[in-house]
Length: 430
Ligand SMILES: Cc1ncc(COP(=O)(O)O)c(C=O)c1O
Image (cartoon, rainbow, N blue to C red; front, side, top):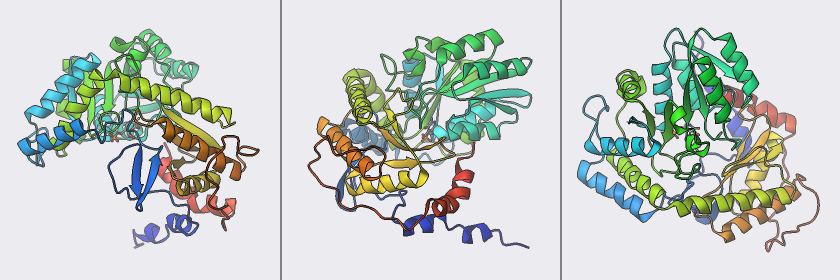
């Protein structure tokens, strides 16, 4: 027989990238997640987190977490289904459901668990799940686990969505979309989706992972942003971004949640969310509602960065949110730029094909980034973009620091593509 580990011994992509000094993953952060973190003893400005409201190091959120751990202990030691539900889980479920205007909600251990659990539970043998081609991997994983068929439409292309609806008009179906797309930062065309869903009699599921706390006057997400909250049948949100914790909510009608609660394998066959995490969510949900000025600052920062990048000639794609991708186009260059930015004190991450059609550096902003942070980030982006030839010319932002070093890489583009091709393809293929 062949050794099943053969593929592991032959997996050299990361070794090759590390040898070139551009490996960007699993960096060891030595501090709390704020607009700055400590890595290797050095302060770095963070532009790659999902800490939109800046609550991950908020003293009240930390206090909520400590209080919950003191009262309920460190673990629930079992599934929500059996011994792992406590009154704090139910308290935050009620608070979340009320906030997003649904009858009830259920809290899973992660956002990923909530998507795979809810989608595989709702999409039965003869049902259809209709997804946007750029939906998050956890949605796709849920569709793969579901017994029904997955049908896909081109990204935010409503004519293509309608074609798929016509093709499948006799099936019972649900459309599942990201509210804000996690790499592109654009917003689902919910008004058209709602019209089509009504016309063809299908349900709507919106993943508000990147829109909770960000979109809508009250921060409830994409539904509120478009004034269509009551037209969304199922609201999913993760607690790992604006809510500064971990966990995933699914909110809907009483009947739908009762069904999911008793059929979602990723809820039933895993241990429940630890008290410390639920305590943090409880407080973060209050702050989200009590301090709308955080959302205002987040948007002020977002506008400044978008204008700043665009005015230096960088392409920010279709972004309409605090996720602002910088189009690089070339995979290797994106890795190189992230390394150069890191050396300059800016923490970003490269995202390459097939996760996105062309390589980007995904940047994202927080309410707690100061003007000084944002100026620093723009300075460094301009400097590095010019060094690698992404934009032409001299430094117009008058950066106070000079480039540390001009990177020379032994890798050719082809070597890089060969080294990473199968890894990225298998990891990201959707
Ligand atoms: C759109 C989207 N949905 C779901 C998830 C999964 O959430 P979690 O990190 O809480 O598992 C993510 C996480 O990155 C996401 O971006």
